[in-house]
Length: 260
Length: 345
Picture 1 (cartoon, rainbow over the protein chains, first blue to last red):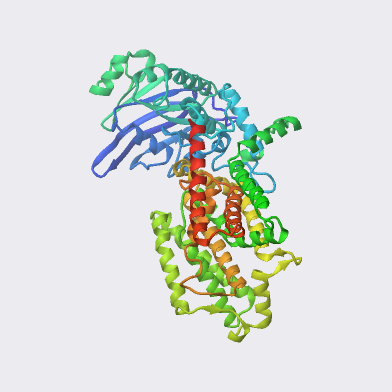
Picture 2: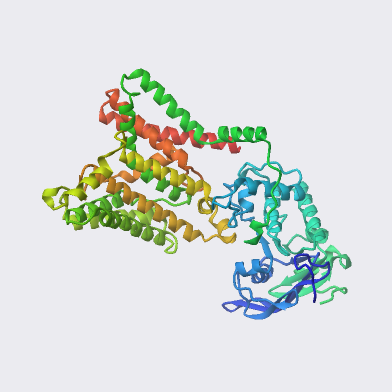
């Protein structure tokens, strides 16, 4: 595989392959021989009930847990991810359901949290951080105006866009989004949908954890459904109906068009 | 990180825009209310008394608030990081008495002062480790340390007062320089204690509002979880805040010893922790973390200092003074709370 610019993935390139992953806590097989993959410019939904294992699976990718067995391949090469810093080195960024923003700080401060820009004197460069934030927000969410207010004053959708900006600014290639629309109204859900389209166009691959079938049908290209720690199947969203997905989640039943 | 160096700068804003921004930032600042309260107090006192505005009295106020102020700068870091330190009054006593005893034992100035500061660092480390890696609430950890450190000071001195003078064995030149630290005047007018306070406040301000460390203190206090998933070592940030507090409490204690120059383990710095916390809170810092500034703290310290001074000049009895100061603390924090609520609503 020869690539001139490793930062820009070609659409369709396989970014992530998780092969035969197992992890158990005590006697419980939380993830049981599960394989999923993700291509550049693609959104793969991870569906399942609470406790189905989707969050655990994805935490193995983000470095919060370590698999008991199985391999993770990033761009075709075997990767060792033992903590969130490793994940970040592989350009994997996670956007948590709680968004993990410091409520008392403004958007720029949150964007650069832990990676502050400093001047040559070693002092924090507020102006540069704000300018960078304005630049990236003008691309992601042109209506965003509240640059000097703590993020606690922002709406759910605006907070989401700050969290996404944070990931994108630091050059994420693989994005993990945990229930990105869970706390949002219809208008803001639409805004996040538009954001996701933009990220796809940039060749970023997204794992989207959700238990909302409509979100998955709307936002995802493929969906991997888990039940009781096992993979029920992975389907192209265009090939299935809402009811097919529901059947997979509740009954663990694969529809005719499933390819796994 | 390589990203941080390769960032293209935007066109600089025009100076006019910039000034407008600066002004709106200033007006929006929380310290403005505290500052106005201080101004009102000063105007009132200069009209009501004949000597409040005299430079001698003002320098006196400056000296009187200096030790409180030095400690309050440290407490600002601890409170913003979402913790609290109740052991500072005891640290003040133990470090001051230790340096004093070492000078009486014939030590030189630098080793004696350094030893006192190291004690402060160690107490800060213990407070920090217990409150972070030890997962104790800092209220409990430092409450315990308050008692332990006070007890150690009592054991060390046998409960006897420590007085630093040449009859007890202090080397005359060392004593002179020690007393200059606490009692002297820079250029013959500015009290040395005030000089220390100003230097500490400027360093504290730069550290808190200018450096990545200060930035992280706010992040950790605002949301430890957000800070942690951003790769910030929240424990280490809190630990450093406690160490800064410890060393500043020690410095204030040593300066107090140099000023008097005596102390008693059972009395020195007793209840001081509450004065320090009160000053920082009056200055706008939040006990729940994430909010506060060094400028606000300095103003809070000045309010407490000017209030005490003014009540004395007005001839108010010391008993009534205590009541007044308590009222001011409650009113200041209440105004702050109510105005923040209406702002976020």
